[in-house]
Length: 419
Image (cartoon, rainbow, N blue to C red; front, top):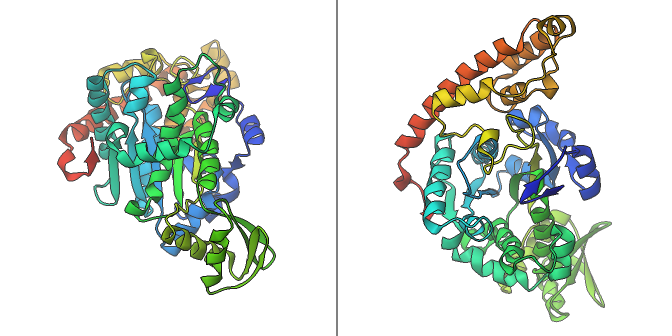
């Protein structure tokens, strides 16, 4: 079972991709300049419309990266993975939008305002310590962002209970606030395209697979709330109006060859130029002209004792704010892919792909050369689990020490933060 609030059981990523139309990230990897290690290693396993982002990168056009964190517990290595992705995208030229989902933490998890603020600052300090730059960046708490809340109200007019039940499994006992949270999430994802933030642009949302329901719903809402819709045809684009026939008349003012029919207009020429011109027209007419958001999907970080690493299960994670010595101890208690005995380990070798410790190396703590050496020595039986854990424990201990010093020294006044 996978929902934005709960993950149970073994996750079959191939089945997720088949059932929900997520495309393999491997198919576009060679198109990405200087891909992030998580992309090259298959940890980022899927995407929707990421080609839009790659095209914008290469053309030097405006685009953005947006993701958020619910401050229901201490930030941990699972959160670090998303933070690393946001920082990488910012470094590649995107404007970064980071959300602290305090409304969701308050109304779904029951945290106080004071607690969400306290935890929220730790998430903000964490992503800055990991490399987020103050220019081309907006950090905000949901409760302080009027654009998100106003947009959520408008988007709520485009859906109903039946759809939310189909997407999220809601039932008559589900509280109204939990049903409204997806509208807030959609507001988060789409508001970087509002006129006050530069208008329509490609936006990528890096998330774990459990957040895909929000992306599917938001992509649908992005289309529904706009005036014009697009359909590629031979030689151009077919444009329809969701808001009445009168808007189609406005298309005749565009500098393209076109043919008007009842209910739609066919416009001929470069499809990208046509869609851009029509979106600009929509904004002049007071519409949103949203581009459906792109997304990337990373695998879940496995908990130290198995299952998903979760803020609600302290024993499952290494927090970015654990004492360095405690982080090292947690590594030593983690599950491995070792054999039952030392003799079997030396004879048969370990199984790194079933090992939490090797996963931590893969996701966070090893470059390509080091990772390959660990895999080879493990599979050959030359590296025992105790040795491997001890090495990683020292790495984690040093990382936490340096990270926490950076986080403590962050000057929040240098950043634009809505709170």
